[in-house]
Length: 85
Image 1: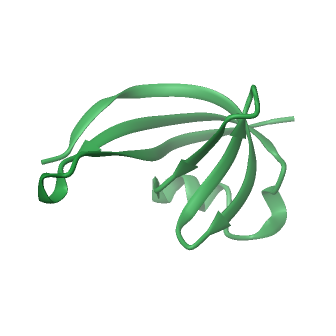
Image 2: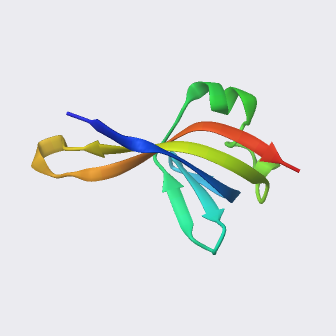
């Protein structure tokens, strides 16, 4: 059963979309890879195209603990993006 740990906000640059994963470079050069994204976010920002590469966003996301097959791991899901100009 999945359990939401909590919601967080970060500022980061969108770097790439690759095989279903969304990569952002956060402040402090930390890389965070998101496995999931809300469909409404993709409707607003087409991250599958190169249009937003290196664009700065405020990222609201949630951390989900998944215990599939007795192995726990954390899934990061984008809940909201706000473009920072």
